[in-house]
Length: 352
Image 1: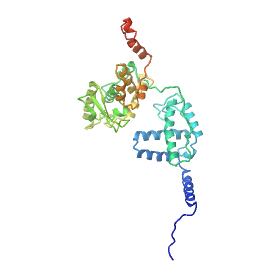
Image 2 (image 1 turned 135 degrees about the horizontal axis):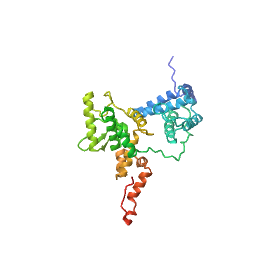
Image 3 (image 1 turned 90 degrees about the horizontal axis):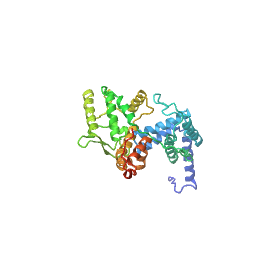
Image 4 (image 1 turned 120 degrees about the horizontal axis):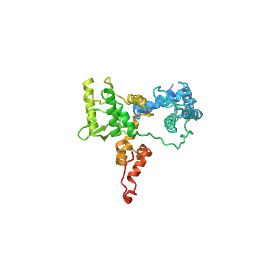
């Protein structure tokens, strides 16, 4: 007896099989937790080449959501628009800034709308991915809109008086404080992002042209750039590296901790947090030095387009947001540059 050969399939057989597979797939997905779905998302993003810092942000944002639910095994199918809206209200009304960090936790309840929108942006990207990939049958963020606000997110730069207090409080006889002071000089002089600064190696310092090279591996926009620095800062970087070699042995890294290990941005944030309490400042974090550089660069006569290149902003609108001037700066600039001066002959006098 010959073998039976299957040629044309039975009518509607293909549609039936597809429905059965989809039903089986749907059953398998019903017990997927948000944490498991997060790992699927991260795996896809890592395949796209996102950096480890970005992956950590993904994990942190989902950790906030799971903290709110109170259930580490919260199921993805339970993530509904209603749950998300309640989560938004919790962030706006109850959540404290740096709530997970006892040393940095704010007493004020409620995050700014801008901060909430950053977290919603991450969740929106994830929900779209889960829906598109068939991991969930609905996009829970599809009808969720960003929080409206008239507030403009501002990171205020530091005043001259604040900078003097910060620098004056650092004892250069202590290795860690001398290193911190050198790092602050570098940030104020170059506008580097903190991760770009703390990962600098001695090979990235050009002593001939007084500039540092930010590699594409570290740069936020994945493009290398050369950033000018002052001769005084070049000298301090060389001195710090030389002295560190004498203590800890050979290393290309410029910034090390007191044990000879790589000094990182989080360690610097913690040190600044302790310093702000010591000198009685309300806020003090690394990004303020970058904003201070941007503001003072323009006040001292620099142009916006060169500043954009130095700060590594792809859009000049971002650079504009960095320029936050207080009333004193505005009055000073008006007094100095008012067109009426050339008609009245009134000399410029700096306000003290």
